[in-house]
Amino acid sequence: MNKALEDLQAGRAPVAPPKETLPDPRSPERAANWSIGLPFFSILVTQAVMVTTKSAPFMSVPLVGLIAAVVTVLLLLGGLTLGIRALCGGSGQMSDRPIVRSVFGILLSVGLLAIFATGFVRGYHQAAKNRILAGTVHDAEQQTKSELKKSLEENRTPTALEAQLGLDRMKSSLETVSQNASGPTALLAKASKGYLETLQPLATNYDASLKALLKPPLLDMAGVDRREQLQARKQLVQNFLAANDRLEAFVTNRAKLYRQALEKAAVPAEYIETALNYKSFTGFQENDLTRRIREDDRRMGMAMLGMLEVLNTSFGRWKYNAERKKVEFDEPAALDKYLVLRDELEAASQEQKKLQTKLLELASR
Image (tube, rainbow, N blue to C red; front, side, top):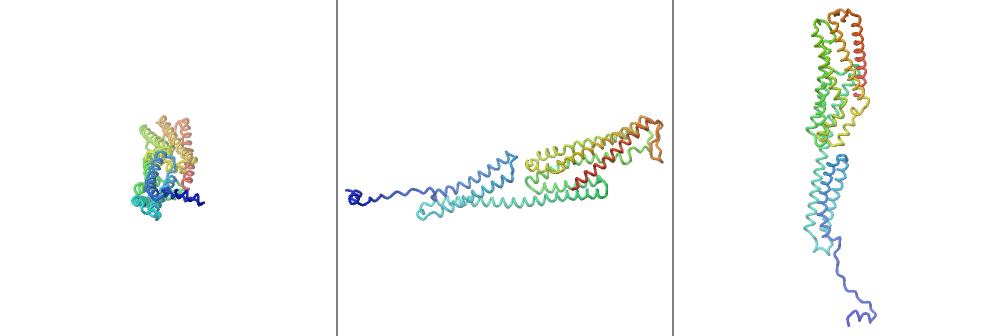
């Protein structure tokens, strides 16, 4: 009779047979496996974020990058913790301690953390450098505003030379940023410089054509004794009107043209929107003033063409009075037409001066 039956007959509780020891699901071996798996998973997370931000430009890159960085660090710290835990397993499992996998997991997590930390420090320093470089653009802009305020205080519009120097200053600062910054900051600076380089020849051509009307004065008829001289002056006015039209086409569509330049340079979408939200592109008043100034130029040009045509049609029946510095017509009808056009020229000129003052006030703020 076996021992269990004897115990039962004697009134003793049977002794349960010893149970086999089951493996602990939280054993050092499992911890070692996770210590290797988590670092690799962190790599997958990083790659997934990079692919997502490229395919979905509408996403906030800094926010997504910050979340991805936090998740990556947590995964790597988790892998490091589990690797250490596997090495420091219970004393009863010392013989089963998965040393190789634990050590590999720890080294992998530490290595990736070191790479991440190095990249973070490098990125931090580069971001700080980008901010300093961007400050040069801000300083150039502030200097331009200061010069505009000075012009207002002196009750005059900026000269062509001052405008040219302002453009050159902005281009120089943008060139510095594009060559020394990195990432979207460099791309934005390069695209902005290209945008100004497109504007500059249009402004230069406009200024040259305007000077041709003023020096010597287009309507000064002293020494004009041939029709060909009037035709040459008409051509100067037409050159001015063409230059004004080209400048108007640019400035009235500057937001669209700037967006195209930024997109061509592969500037991230959120940087594009930030740049285009600048008041010079979005301000209705600025846009309206710019449009009206260009329209006044057109009015003045057409008035001058009309006055030259009256002189051409009445050629031989008018003379220039050098003392009074005026044209004297033999025909009252021709004089009336000439005076009406002269009044239109003067009215457009006066209105433009007022509009330019308002635009300068807005730009100098």
